[in-house]
Image (cartoon, rainbow, N blue to C red; front, side, top):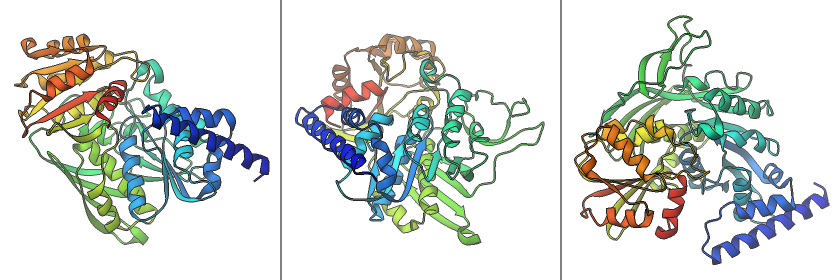
Length: 452
């Protein structure tokens, strides 16, 4: 490494740390500002990830679940006593990843692993600076069409990133047919569920899935569909079907936790393992399965993985459980139809929950809120309690609930987010739970007054 490169890197590093210290003193949540400073001083700042990582760089992308999956995997690796660099705050564009390096890297040292969540559209830019050893793909759903376009556009952007790294190994959620042809020239490791059982107060998804076409242009059919277009699929015309699974899961979903039975073949010998995760819902069981599969593949012991699952604390509004004024609060970020519908299934008919939905339409949320009409809010039409709506598009949300069949006399509109939160919190008993469903910038605003 050239001395001039080192000087540039460390100048950027210490400048970014100084900016972060200032933000901390001001109690600001500007998670990307230190990274912006670092990249301004040293345009190749991120390339030093590869120089100082001793084992593996693992990148994670997809529409839903990347923050939780990355958080779980990083926590598993830390529990194994490895040193890990991770953008744990979920800032997943170049400036956010640079911030994590700047804030968490100890000068003149090395670390074992880097676990980097990346925005789908920014993965190819990230790969301009680093050679990742692994890429984990969670899923592809329609998300913020005003920013990302349709699914095939997102898939092409991910493939463009993969093409920059021929040695990249890819963990693929085999249950998502949108990922079937991504990374064909790379080594692919497939994970998914062969069976799912519900032992909950909510039902498995019954909403019709948006049709997904096979490469032969026929619509795919399903032996088992778990939610949206995720499941054990096949093409009745050409015979294409879900890939065989390297990590084959069987999930039992309860109200407050999930059990995962996992079969895989280390060194050719079939082994079955049992794991329990305290995260809520099938979508989080998928996140856990992805993280577990990656951890096993790189050699982490099952006992260490379970120890990490037991102690894991949810990241920044992703199934995050809080206690506020001796009341139970669960915060679930929503940002697209599939993710929001899965969260809604966990509250359907559950009278022990009070619901607050906060919809903003700032740039980071996506200006286009038409996704509300693709979300299965019909699940709430018989919900027995009042629902409070807030945010810049509170009235749009109220209208959506009306057309979903919900009793309009039970809809409360409070556009001020802080006011809506404490109003909802004060309306529940200690044994009940407030479920908050905010979009991204609403979550950031909550973070300010709750110090999440």
